[in-house]
Length: 215
Ligand SMILES: C[S@@+](CC[C@H](N)C(=O)[O-])C[C@H]1O[C@@H](n2cnc3c(N)ncnc32)[C@H](O)[C@@H]1O
Image (cartoon, rainbow, N blue to C red; front, side):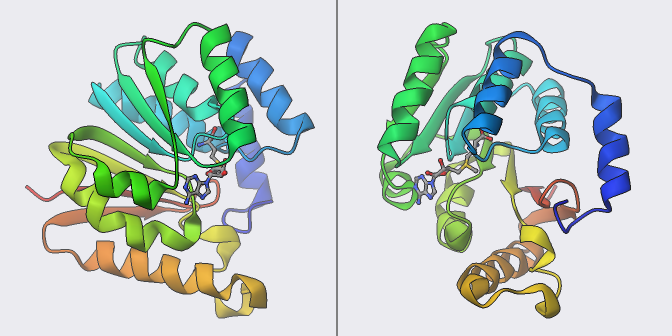
């Protein structure tokens, strides 16, 4: 259980989503067997919905891991989106590159090796959709760059925004997670108070924060 939504609720929602097959199922199995953290099933479905709705041509992802969410978003767009995804762990990059090659996404997914903050500092292009899923303790540092890189109609989805419930309740906070909690609260405070952006925080998966520009 995530500590964010009731278990019975998660189980029910997951039962309605059903199972992926093919590539995604294989990757889910790999992630499970090798304890690689990939998006929760209901967050994966939310991403699929947003990609279907917004039809973003350019997507930026922070946190590739084995390439699961990048491939999921690419498939949801029928390979019409171009995805740039950033990862710093060499082993993850190797597996993600193998997956991208094996499943023929080379034309659609670029994996950039490096620390998200350092990579963000060098980026100039605009993106229609940004999925933040790396370095929970640094979302507040990534934010100004992401806001700058976001297209007029763009959307940011930040995963783990409620981090096992700890963000919402001091009673749940584990000592060694205090920095993550403080910084994630900073992220949520900043983005929730922003006069140019509107954000909705949704208690699904580990919590997501969805941000778009105000009209
Ligand atoms: C939750 S996983 C990403 C999962 C992936 N989005 C998916 O659902 O398939 C987070 C990844 O971010 C990477 N990461 C963490 N902090 C990072 C940073 N500062 N820069 C780059 N990558 C980072 C980790 O190595 C890990 O592979």
